[in-house]
Length: 384
Ligand code: SF4
Image (cartoon, rainbow, N blue to C red; front, side):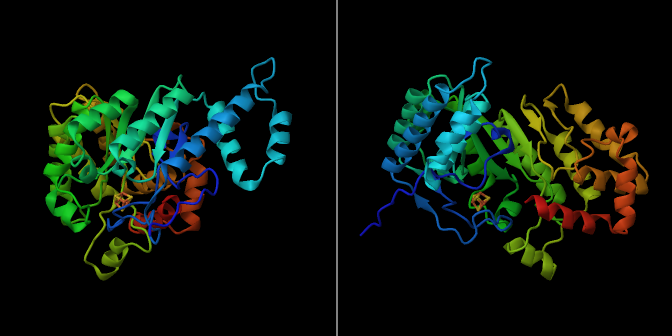
């Protein structure tokens, strides 16, 4: 017999895209139904489960209820009356405090967007999905955006008409982890989809009238398939023309199959310099699209890569070139300073007040141009 999904209070999953920092998180499913990508440890050892419709609606009702209470406790200056909200918080059980916290955070950031969790929310029945979207719109009529993560494998199995219904009900952006467009790399990382599937899924989302955000992962092809990875990923994106291409550099994290492969030598992670070359080739190969390119993650070597194709293509490539113009010592300083959060791009080095501090850190850890990548790898593990 199917186990009952007992309601334990408002739930939130572990992750959301960086661009959804201000979004209210509503959890439709728990964890990842695939959970086999070799580089990913987010949901390792966590079993996938669907949440009951009843419990999802309870979460939304609970949020709505607290938002209404917050609205009754706004000062004349337009701020939340902290004393009143604290009193409410103290009167609640722990499980209800999570919902109140989420409501306060969402209210404070303007209540404009909602992100549906976890890794592949669109796996639930289309009718249920549409019902949830409509319910959210009814409770929060002023929201501009509802978004979710979805696997290409799932999207290709949803009927076009159902995708259209979801779009009409308010789902206006889907985030897809493409990672690579290379069939060799996709097979090696066990993504469970090939290039053709990624393209088909992407085109279906666009045809339904939703915005599409595709995540790509420099470094994932290893040294061996770096060029193939760059060119095939760009080729897949050229066929889709997504609204957003988001870069998230590979970090090999402990406990993953990829980390084991790195240990045995079956996978060789490219250095930062190799990845910069790979990224340059990737950007160069993008063609015939008008996507926005975003590099909004601390793992990325160049946060300043941010622009619209095709007009900003040269500007973005120039950022990488300015990294190559640095001498090896300066490049190592940039790599460390970037990962410490002091630089967004190579140009920041000229005027940075933090240069001395970064030099001291490099001295402390004995960073040299030869060992900088292994030191960076250790630093990066803290962010994944
Ligand atoms: S589909 Fe996404 S969440 Fe699931 S294992 Fe792969 S990368 Fe991780």
